[in-house]
Image 1: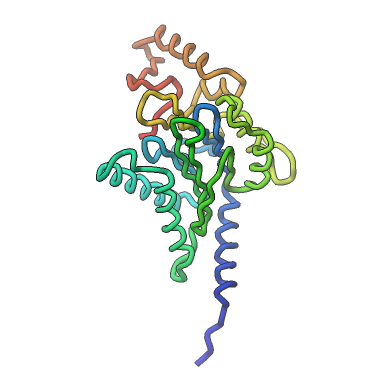
Image 2 (image 1 turned 90 degrees about the horizontal axis):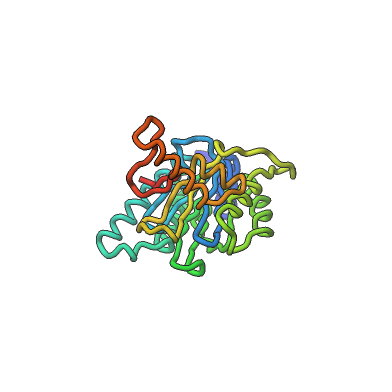
Length: 270
């Protein structure tokens, strides 16, 4: 009978961590920034069906990088946790901190289990408050630890360089347009110090907007409003022009009004 090959616990955990980090580094980055009216999420994601950024609950959103099937399972679990807690107790009892703790326990258990591989994912859970001081951003690496972030954070491939570029230029009182342009400028930086071009079609953009009159503060930004923000236009101007265009063509083939109270070119997460 042969003697089993021995690996120290420290080496085993280091190997699992390295395996997870390599998987995460292969993914395109996601950045999250606070701005004057809320929290902005920007991901390099050409897909319109497989989202990296999603709504979890009224004031809470989720962003992830890594293996899609793994972080999608976590997202669904988070939605179920939030719905159950909000229904059983009160909607205000659903918080980003509570959700981050649930994710930390799940990721930590999987990472330390010898019976399965670690998840190749990194998560961000954010909650928009009544004031900028009440905003909460939590980053959860593959091992289940929790990092409370402020201002800006990047995850995924080349996150260190992207995050460093953002942190030097970020201001809490930035407008949405300025924050979006900083996020895109940071995402275009590659590991060799050069810059790439990113178009609106290659971006997934969403916000938690504290100024929205609806209970649900999550909103995707797509189409013409996104293009105007990237070019330096204002959200208000974009909305006024789109509303005028919709009113002029109401009922026609180009009518995009949904009757839901959403700004044209934006959508709440279903």
